[in-house]
Amino acid sequence: MRRVYMDANATTPLLPEVLEAMRPYFIEHFGNASSIHQQGQQARAAVEQARESVAALINCRPAEIVFTSGGTESDNMALFGLLSHGDHLITSSIEHHAVLHAAEKLRDRNIEVTFLPVSSEGVIDPQDVRRALRPNTKLISIMMANNETGAIQPVSEIGRIAAEGDVLFHTDAVQAAGKLPLDVHTLRCDLLSISGHKMHAPQGTGVLYVRRGTQLEPLFFGGAHERQRRAGTENLPGIVGLGKAAEIALKTLSDGTIERIKALRDRLEQGILAQIEGAGVNSRNVARVANTTNIYFDNLEGEALVIALDLKGLCTSGGSACASGATEPSHVLTAMGLPPARARASLRFSLSKLNCEDDVDFALEVVPPAVARLRELSPVNAGTLG
Image 1: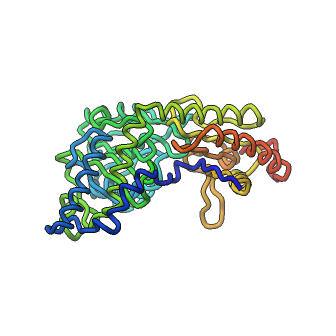
Image 2: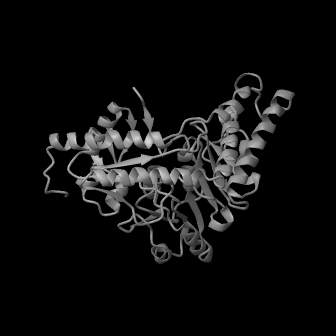
Image 3: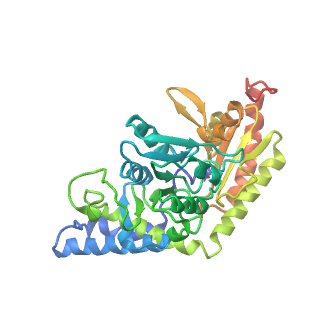
């Protein structure tokens, strides 16, 4: 059976070039980057080369890059490393759970937290950020691009507001890296998170950019790795792969790849809407990252459609998550004001640079009949969206 993967916002496969860059560091050049012998120094040189490559992707100093295990650790490090009793955090209601759940835990530790609302298109109003500022506001944490809808947030303007208020600013750029130009100076951010496996690097790799002079408490304690900001022997092959992926991502921002992916996404989106009644695009009227569309299919359950499409060979992602055996609507879509039934009926299609026209043709071939079949079987009341 042919299989087509359209769930790149969940994870991406390694590019062949990334795997080849990593290969020697599993067996031949396996040294500990903290060792002073030749094997160790070869490892150290590889780590520092990768650090330079990632720094070039976001236009910062290599010394401001901290390698982590992924986006979740980077987000947690940013929040827990900066906030303490009596501080105030501003974040949004549509953040990834790596930020939302961290903020909830911080609130349990007597840190004040403001969760900002979003518009019906899933975008934060920067003036809401300004109005939420307090004398004890220590950190603003707003994602750059939403993982479910692809909606791009006004982070540059929020960065200016933070700078004017002498407040630290962190942005989760996990879904932006490799899709949008990243410049920490333009963004005016003090911290920025990246996850390797969302940009064709290996899973278990990530980065936290920490602006020089920012005082950050480590999450881990042990050796003096990463300039005493993240203890633990470096994941050498993973870091090498992340560095290579960063080099490739930087090139794709200017070689037409992003435009090609956007054309595929738009064709997929338009084809689905043309063939299926009762379908629409969430966050359709705002800027989105080029690879992402989130489409609702009224009068069916999204999770059932994900399974049906998977059986046909198409990998997508639901706009809802399963918790404790019950399907709950997406917190992102409900924050946008979607009724629970419509939120549960939403699917995310997210493309990568490996997708092609034939993949879109395949999706347009299998999605309409799958939707029609599920609607025939669905117990959902056709007149109820609430």
